Amino acid sequence: MTANNLCTDIGYLAVNHAGEQLCGDHIEIVEPDNGNSTIIVLADGLGSGVKANILSTLTSKIISTMLAAGMKLEDAVETVVATLPVCSTRGIAYSTFTVIRIVNNQKAEIIQYDNPKVVMLRDGKNRELPFNEISIADKKIIKTETDLCENDVFLAFSDGVEHAGVGLSYNFGWSRNDIINYMTTFWHVGFTAKTLSTILIDETNKLYEGQPGDDATVCTVRIRKREPVNLIIGPPANRDDCKRMMSLFFAKEGKHIVCGGTTSLLAADYLHKQLHPSLSFDDPEIPPVAQLDGAELVTEGVVTINRVLEYAKNYLDDNKSFEQWCYKKDGASLIARMLFEDATDINFFVGKAVNPAHQNSDLPITFTIKMQLVKELADCLEKMGKKIKTSYF
Image 1 (cartoon, rainbow, N blue to C red):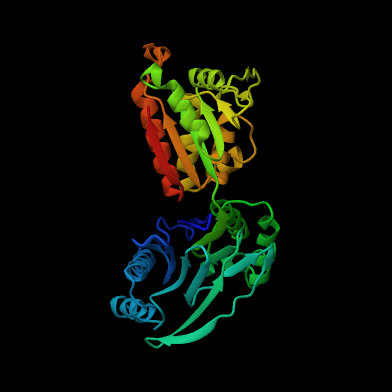
Image 2: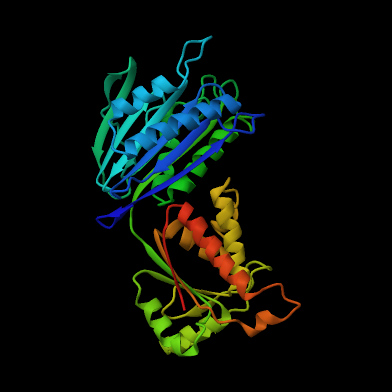
C-alpha cells in the first residue's frame, strides 16, 4: 500500500503453546479493492491447540472480510458474536481480537477487544494512545484513531507475550513497561516490521525458557518511506537488446543490484566503468562479490540467488536465518538485506538468454531453473508485502 511516498510495512511471528502443533492465535491482512487502506486483524482463540486455532481463524477472517467490504465495525463484531460460541464452562469469550486499519498511510484506526493494548512508538519513545470505550453486542470494545508520521511503529500482541516468564524469569509475567522499554532500544536501528516482531518473539520465547505456556504472537506495523531496489540477472535473449535493457535498468530510481558474471560485464560495458572482481570468500559456498561504480552491489548469479531464495522462504517461516544474513558480507546476505530490509518496491530485470556454461551436463543448473528461482523469489517477496514488477528481455 503506497501513498504520499510512504508505505505500510507489516510483519508478524508467533510461537505455539508448548506441545501444540497449531497456533491458537491468527493474523489476517487484507487490502480492500479501493487500494487506499490496509486492515490487520490479530485474533487470540480461547485456550490453545486445534479449537483455539479454528476460533481465532474464523474471528480474524470474518472481521477482516466484513471491514474490507465496507461494513461497519458494529456489524462485524455482532456477526462474530452470533457466529462463534462462548465457552460453556467458563462463559468467557470465544476469541479476543485487535484490529488496525491504516488509511492512506496518514491515519490509523485501532479497535480492540480484550487483547493487550497496542503499543505505539514515535521518535523512539512510547506514545500513549487515547482509547475510548464503547459497547457493541454487550462487549466492551476500546477504540482510537491517530495521525501517522514516517517511522511510526505499532506493536500488537496476544496476551501470551505479557505472560512470558510467569513463575520463571518473572513472578507475574513480562510487564507492558518492560516490553516497551525493551523494544524502544531497537527503534533507532530502522529494522523492518518482521525483524522487530522476530526480536520480540525471540525474547518472549527465552523468557518461557523455550517452553511457552501460551501461544504468543507479535504483529508489527511500521510506516516507512518507499525505497525502490532494482535487480538485473542474465543477458537478454537478443544481444541487440542489451543497451535497451541496461538503460531501462539504470534509469530506474533506487538501488541497483547486478547478478551474474556475463550480466556484470555487460553492465560495466554500458556504464563505461571498470569492473573490480574480488577473490575474497566471505562464505565458502557463495562466490565473491565485485565492485562497479554505478551499482550498489554486483554478485554471481544462480548460486547466490538460490541462497537468497532459501533465506526468503525461511523469512516467511520462523525467520531463524536472520541470524546469518543480518550481518554477513557474502553476496547472498547483502542481497537479502537490500531486498528484505531496505526495499519496499522491487523491479526485476530478467534476461532470457541461455548461458552456454549452464548447458554442461555436470552442472545441475539450467535456464529453466534460473527462471524458476527468480519467480519463486518474487513470489516470496510479494508475500513479505513488497511491490514487485518483473520485466523479461
